[in-house]
Amino acid sequence: MSPQSYREMMEEYEEALLAAEAAKRLAQNVEYADHEDVMKKLGLKETDLDDVEMN
Image 1 (cartoon, rainbow, N blue to C red):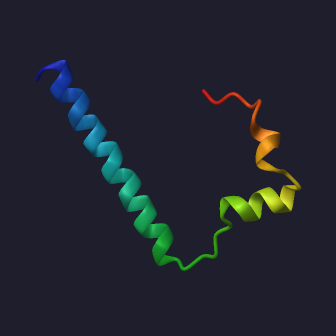
Image 2 (image 1 turned 120 degrees about the vertical axis):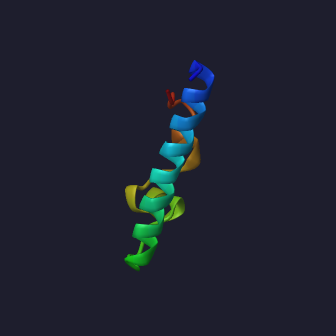
Image 3 (image 1 turned 180 degrees about the vertical axis):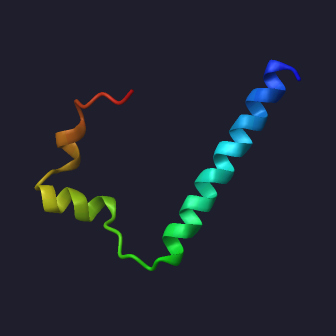
C-alpha cells in the first residue's frame, strides 16, 4: 500500500469516527450552546478574538 493510499484510508476512517460520534450526540437530544451563546455567557465580543492565534 502506498503512503498516499494509507493516508487517504486513515482520513476516511477518521471521518467515519467523527460522523459516528456526531450521530451519537444528535441522538441524545442534548441542548447545545452555539458560538453566540458561549460568547455572550463569557462576556466576549468577536473583536476580543482578533489577536488570538490558532494553530
